[in-house]
Image (cartoon, rainbow, N blue to C red; front, side, top):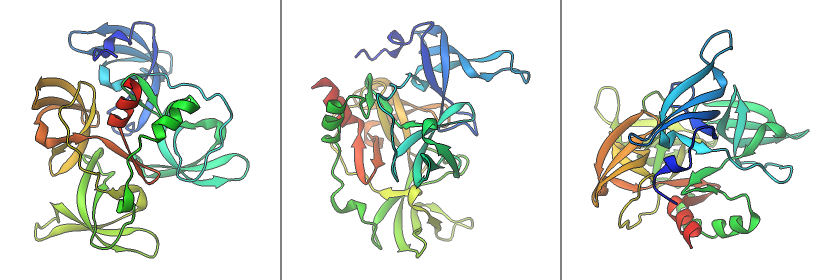
Length: 303
């Protein structure tokens, strides 16, 4: 696939759009492409469900960075039943919100937790879909069962890292304003009786700067440290984590300046910052006790 994503986003195409605005992070909204500007990689869209006026008569239009867009996810071929810990998108407040199933209820209903808002809400199965990511022109996990089996074989084995033990180095995320989209290293001090974890950050200090900050977090906000990988180089539009402001922030390579320097775009803050390769790592997702990497997806797609 071409690195120029504007070639697949043409005027009139229906897409999904992510938002950087407070209260909307973690959601995808359907929209129609109105105009493309390939030179600066921006696209004007008109939303299907978001309105510019209180009367709801004028659809909202915005000009966005191309990395905030993706095609419409594929529709499932069969009626789905979800299980505990499944990553899903839930249709809520006119958009699709990323969440995780925390309870299977009678009557094809599910309780879903949203990390971005720390809310837990109940949905019918018809309001949910499998959570998919758009990597290198393909959906992950794939819709086709054969591709899905091949994809699953590319998952990284976490070995013993999925056991949280006292003294282990872990990574912790926060839903506080200004920290969304970042993971911070910490030491696991104790697992509490309610299933939460007491941790001490390795880079964040307490308010009076006398010691490293100690907090209690739940299981949705803690993960093992990702495995270290030797990376030769990163590609345009590849998802990465960048070491910035004492944590690892998820972003997208927007420009390759040289073999060792990259401009990275952060959806959460709408910023573009230049990094050395030594300050970047491949973005990995911790899903159902396994690491899933975009590099594995890339190898599957191009094999």
